[in-house]
Amino acid sequence: MQHRFTRNIMVRLLLTLVLYFFLHRINAQAPSARRWSSNGISGLKSYNRKEKQPNFLVLRAGLTQFYGELYEQDMHGMAGVGAGRWVNKNWALKFEYTAGKLGGQEASFFNTYFINTYNTFELHAQWDLTRQFSHFEPGDLHLNAYAGLGLMIFNANAFDLTDGRMLRFTGSKLSARNPLFLRWGKPRGAPGIRNTHEGILPLGICSEYHFLNHWKLIFDFRFYFIRTDKADATSGMRLSNPEESESYSDTPNDKFSYISAGLGFQF
Image (cartoon, rainbow, N blue to C red; front, top):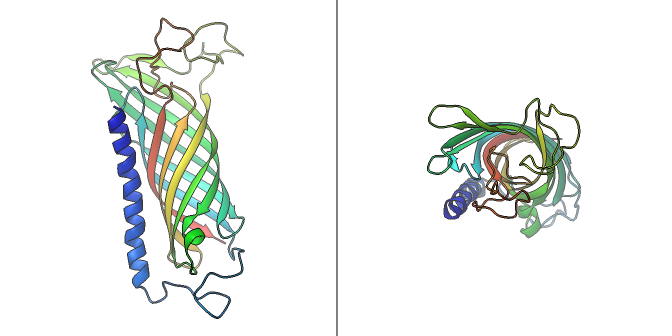
């Protein structure tokens, strides 16, 4: 399972990088591929580190992939919107909201499939690698890396693969806040919890192609670490151990990713 997880991540990262270098090849052959520096004497990077169009909006859509106990893939859709500002030409801060679904199954042990409906709120710091490491004023194609913090709000249900019965869930009329996935000890707060709230760590890499003065195409691969083992409504922790210190799973915290295409407007 760990080998499959690593392979899936590497394939998606490789696709993003291949797309970047493919667009870079096309961009390099264009007559205006290298913009003339504002210093007026060479193509070297401008002395002015301020971005002329510092604010931006982003719309994106793509497909998700889950990594956890129910790891056999069932890819679902997602969509997101974001807004941010370039602090300087190399660094930006952005806030994003995404909504989507996760899915997957595992037949040999759990005989279960799951559906997770989620929303995320995220704050990222974005680093323009092209501007950072190029000695010349960059052209229209840029490669960015980013990382941040966020909150994931979700509801997950697990079903039997044979007859479709619901077996496990993360929220109901009887659910209440509890520090553990398993119902051990006294719950915190009032019952009636529909959606679970968990912290996430998003990491990503994206390529941006500025095809018009204000507009750019964005291709993005993003990976999430979730601070829980219940995103698939299935815990790998042994029921005999309420402290959850033992596990028959190698995914004590669930993860997921998406690959997406988007459109950005910079102003």
